[in-house]
Amino acid sequence: MMIMIHQNMCVVTVVVCVICLFMEMQHVSGVTRKTVYITQNESGARYTLNKGNDTKWLAKGYYAALNNDTGWGYLQVQTNPQNNDTSQAFAAGYVESLLTYDLMYKHWYNTLHGFCETRQALCQRVQDHLDKNLVWVNDMIANHSNTEPYWHQVNLFYYHLEGLAFGYKTAREAEGDTSKNLTFNDLLWLNIQGDLEDLFSAFDTNTGDPPSVRGAQLPASTTCSALIKLLPDSSDLYTSHDTWSSFQSMLRVQKRYIFPYKMLPDSNDTVPGHVITFSSYPGTIQSGDDFYVTSAGLATLETTTGNNNRSLWQYVTPEGQVLEQVRTMVANRLGHCGMSWSKTFSLYNSGTYNNQWMVVDYKRFKKGTPQSLLKDKLLWVLEQLPGYIRAEDKTEVLRQQSYWPSYNSHYFPDIYNLSGQGELAAKYGDWFTYDRTPRALIFKRDHVKVNDTSSMIALMRYNDYLHDPLSRCNCTPPYSGENAIACRNDVNPINGTYPFPALGHRPHTATDMKLTTADLITKLQFIAIAGPPYNTYLPPFQWSKSDYKDLPHLGHPDVFQYQPVLFKWQW
Image (cartoon, rainbow, N blue to C red; front, side, top):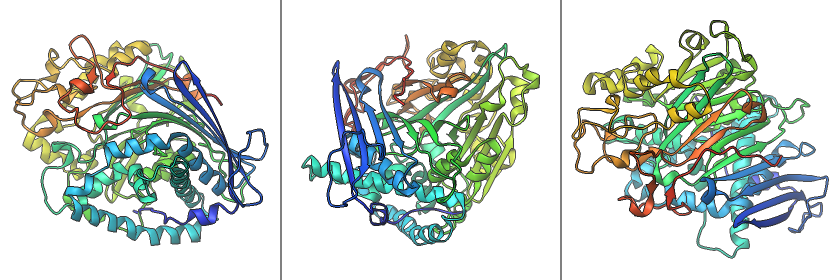
């Protein structure tokens, strides 16, 4: 088990020559579209403009600000393999900040600003833990990044983050903005909010209900619904995911990274996951939701399962562990199949951001293959706890029932028992079981309705909490907007009574839907919907009419009433 943090030292080592840039901005029908090129300046003296026609370009980026039209911004960053990997990684972060620095601040402000004001002692314990990792991480990188692909990719993650921080500072200063300062550490926290949620639980001396009972502490922490569904005639295999998070987190960006990194600094072999498309946020260089499609033909996604056994937090230590949200990107780049992804991800388990991961290897799916003859290793499932990971080929479940659901509950019995979830089931009932919790029963009942993308989207956006008997609870009134595939906790009455807070009125919702298919993944695309679910009985979320309107939501549209979109990438 290990945790990785990288000291703020890459600016010196990466930028051996200064970077030149060219930015082109277009306004089409009120939509801002920006293109940036980064080129090395051989003189190393200053920043200059470049027209983007230099074959020695280091990185280029494109951003389309379509948040008001679709609920999403779209960011694409590509690096040039004629340059070394560390220069590519740093330049990629630099480009992203130049294109989105204003959004980065807004998302940080919405989700992290002021968080530690009432938790100063706890935040300091967490920061101390992260700081102690710096020495160990830098030592591992110094000793192993030239000879081990794993550590080379870890190194590149932090170079990427350093470039993001440097680019943010450059863009802010260019605008003459001295007030919106974000440091490397601020951006690190922005990128590891899933890990932070568990670190706060691990270091909190005030023992109480775990996040699965009370809800998350951090506004950008996520729980989710996911479904992998084989169509009745085996004509397609759908992989879909709903993020569940706070309303504050809904400043969204879809990203495509084209980073032709090598397996090692002196290698000629490019990593399998050199192109990754994913749902994300401003300032984060990983998904966080998590939902990815990679050039290795993999769809990787998770729902958060958490840890409810406080005794396991002893295995979260400041040395020998890599943060989960770093390990995810390392596995996405090095993984060429479900098994290799799982093995890579399992190295240096941090015991933080404990999730159920699913890896769908679309290379092993052939349209029309009978359900009973699906190839082994099509679906790998991994579950993590502090000190323990279990991963298995679960294609047999698809053969047996044509679907794999995921809804924040542990599947493997040993993980379930070790996590302490059984104790919660004994205390609170079926909601904390694997097979009798509301979403398990809804998926079991309704997956048979899926026969095309429209019906799959309908299921993933499903919330009929007022009428569906499976949404009922021992509550007053006797139902909860939490008990649906796509939750809406804001619609629960403020004066309602609930057996535990997660079922009640709180600023928590399904914030999106993503869906890829056997055809779309070949283009590294997915269909997406931004914002909470809405229907005849469920009004669209509107900030100005919400009792949560005073929560920070810089950059958000007022009303979230968006349709499915399939974005056409530039490169």
